[in-house]
Length: 114
Image 1 (cartoon, rainbow, N blue to C red):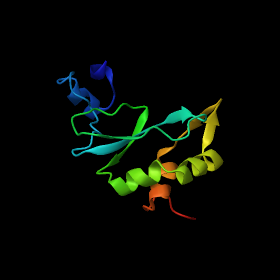
Image 2 (tube, helix red, strand yellow; image 1 turned 90 degrees about the vertical axis):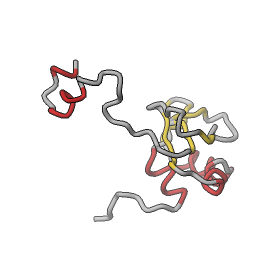
Image 3 (cartoon, one colour; image 1 turned 60 degrees about the horizontal axis):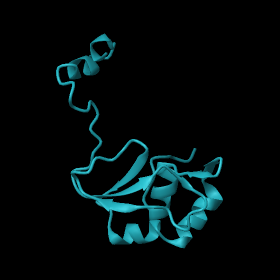
Image 4 (cartoon, helix red, strand yellow; image 1 turned 90 degrees about the horizontal axis):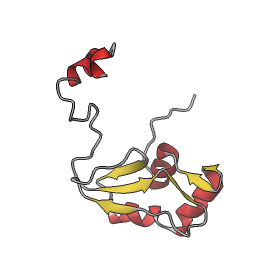
């Protein structure tokens, strides 16, 4: 399948079919956040993971996340913010990476005001 691609970078990866073409795995420990969670939960299930644990594509990560970040993301304040601002899919919260985590953690986002 990679050999039939029109992208040269993808064709190059055909020689190594067992490796990820785009490795977005952090090199250190990280905090894992699910992309979706039930609105019936009191807290969003968030946890610390090691660099050897592969994050699934249905999750977001906070590389080098600290106890401070973990405390904010697992707080009732954060879940109240998610309930108010984030989208929903049936009875499931949809947690989007930039608005939910970077805004909450006080980091600069890539978006610019025009």
